[in-house]
Length: 222
Image 1 (cartoon, rainbow, N blue to C red):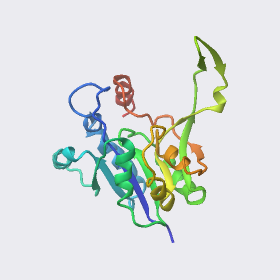
Image 2 (cartoon, rainbow, N blue to C red):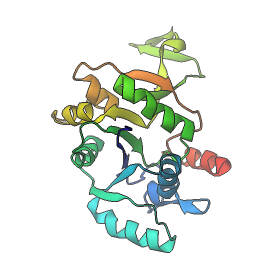
Image 3 (cartoon, rainbow, N blue to C red):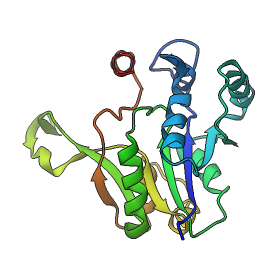
Image 4 (cartoon, one colour):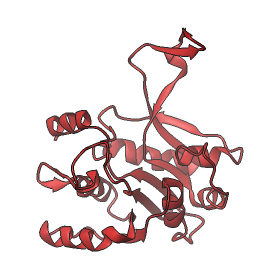
């Protein structure tokens, strides 16, 4: 029997680096706000997914208003965001009681993740427990050492994306830890328990919309 699947979509950013007063997850990209594009990608890939949407509490009413404005009817469960991304994901994880499930965590402002990557991450998490999509570096990189630097073999490094997918019992246990500044993503939280992280190929278009330049690229892609 197939395991139940969840996705926790985290969208707590205020969009300060993007500019403007509207948080980046709500800014319109083509015919829909960014966040709706992201949700659609998951819903149309695996329609049986339970979608947990983590937003700051003060944005819940605004989200409801947007759903009416755009006739957006994909079912989601709203969850209150926390002080940091860690605490926001922690709030989402607290809604999951099925320890046999598979749980993805995805950035709300990554609307271009491919269906193939979503499916593959879930498939591999069933066997590997903790799965992260990555892409290769294309630029040369250097490590700063004091006032100088040295070249580094870029083949030893990867750029990390989401969705990061985990077996639910593992993720639930991981988010019972206290917050630590070293937690930069969900994989780092799970890794802190000594768990191995399995890497799979992501898709290069799966950019995180953070800066005005990202927005230019996103408009071209959409």
